[in-house]
View 1 (cartoon, rainbow, N blue to C red):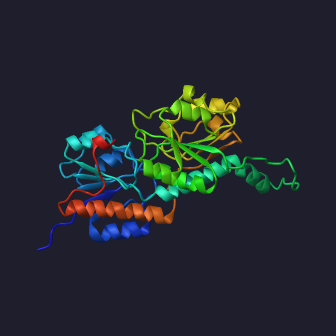
View 2 (view 1 turned 90 degrees about the vertical axis):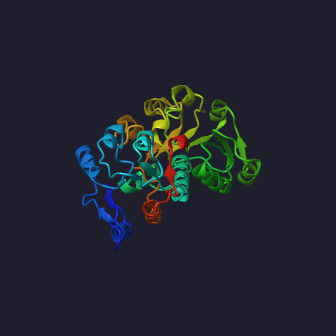
Length: 328
């Protein structure tokens, strides 16, 4: 007699290949609309289900976990970041949490370089002129940006993505510097040709471009606050493809408007979709709608990791990408 299949609820539309495979393996409830679930829909979803598959748009907090039914045993997050999930409360309730690390490293690093190039070479300004049909022809002093070769890139957070950015930056002839909670091994530093800075303040003050690659935790909230942003060169540029909460967005907006920072490239924002309207008006700021992981390949690989985590759990083993509070 075959064993009853796990009941799985998916909170957002996923790539078709992922949804098809989930349906083959589990008793899955898929999302018809490509919109976030409301709070009441999330509460209903966790009432009578074995596995919840949320995304970054879902707040899986203590209150929601407290309303979950007895069946809920795994939250298999579709995404690497889990700051929207109360992992400690889940653990106390006997609910495991897993994520999808690693698969988005190259995609996010590519997007980081895209933002660096866009800001320093003023690509959006050039595109805007062409789209308006206002281009009068080439001029020696028009749209002058800066050369990447020889510039100092400071990487804040030297994990998988930070290291992937370092390799790409080296190919552009940039000088790679980094600050991290733990210093890399000497052989890794040599391979990346990266200079370690124990003091974040000292590194920030000397960089031409600062790229943020750290998770959202209580210790990283506003890590780039007004005081630290003021340490940047007036010609400096800041890029963020990690978590919006790491940068004080209001302070950043104010300083760019005042000419204290040369520009910014952002894919994430402190208040989600509620982006500071003054920030949107600045020509030397490139804003993207959280596109860092937006490749077909990356999103399918994320789904494959979710499936492996659920299947491993179903087979009575620890999900390979289980997240525990000590990791955060």
